[in-house]
Image 1 (spheres, helix red, strand yellow):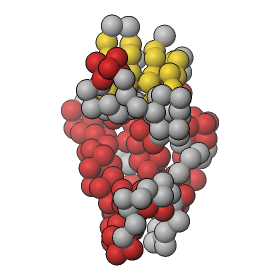
Image 2 (cartoon, rainbow, N blue to C red):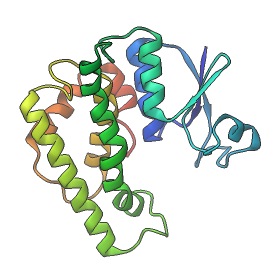
Image 3 (cartoon, rainbow, N blue to C red):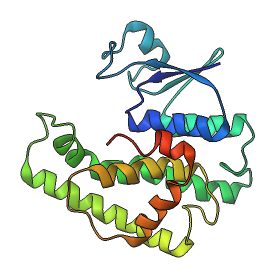
Length: 207
């Protein structure tokens, strides 16, 4: 059985749990991270992931970290071409939105989220919070325009891994107490995702 080291509220762990649910994979969740009984990485944990971050996937003798990479591995390992197409161009259209989520979108929301949700003492500058919220809305507007063009999901008509990593990000944007841009395509997208049982279980909870 797969072992996932992490905690269910983590946005990156939720990507992996949602992917497992879509594929129908059983797993053991071994709780690690802030808010659990093991908040700090041990030497043994660092041997699995030298960066000390969750999630970590243990599949037999194989160990992986980085949430988007884990999601790609699971889809490929179980031949879920619907989630990650084998055709190079179709796959690239999925992966470009996964990479955008991990880079541009994450960079935009970090300060506002850490300040307003995590209440971290290092994130208290009002100007920086406002700038982060504005950047976050701009990035979400980019997603909104794209979803308006596809009329359905990130890579086109069908649900893919891109929608897993974007879905948890949309939920975080909605749950964070900022002034939200009016993005009708994002709202419709979120409602489409809410029709999936795996999203309700793993994507639609926690900020």
